[in-house]
Image (cartoon, rainbow, N blue to C red; front, side, top):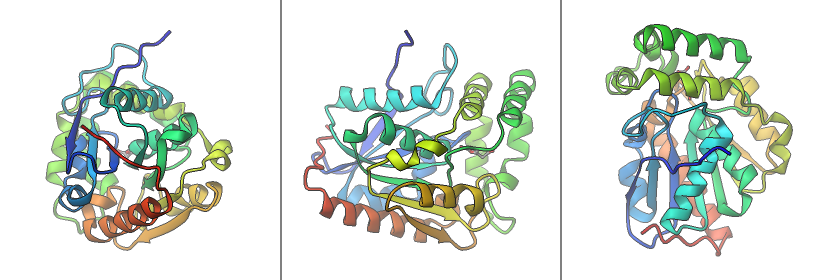
Length: 265
Ligand SMILES: O=C(O)CC1=CCC(=O)O1
């Protein structure tokens, strides 16, 4: 049996406020969410975590799956004594949230899926990327990251690319392999959490068409917001509209769900 370990994490915001978990993308750390942290942590207890081999989380000792990442988040909630949360995730962080909402529906009161997908394309290119990084390190994927993550006019890419350059190659490769095995397209109709899908209109890895639209059409009652002039890391490139959309959804869903109380100690 695989041991599920809770990931490295950090809590900000008022103790006792409802908890919002923020999931990072491939090659970034919990600091991907720094643009949203001041606004969110005014009213919410914000729980951020790192992916295996990313940020301060050690590299994995074996294969990584998105199911395993979601189970790690659930285990973290257990350890912190938190029953129900809102979950917002970017890209693979969104896949973790989608999976948590499927595997532990009672724990997800509200879901925000940002620049993500129920299936990140064919598995082959992800396995090829994992093999490249295991062979040559993260250098080649870091050199091309700004072009995958942001629109050409964005000038603030450096801190995000630096997160990828500091990522452990084994951890990065294992997360690519997790994405190769991820496909929840056929299960989206089972999600019960009120869901907001946020897309960047110029997102190259997960464009609105074929990714965000599948989520918005597949998750019952989901709403879709497409942010203008935004690439894949839309929350970093266009923090204003993304933060506003997240807060509106949190406010609306918190109002709907009176059982959603955080401890977040
Ligand atoms: O390829 C990238 O770097 C973009 C990406 C795909 C999944 C994810 O989390 O980031």
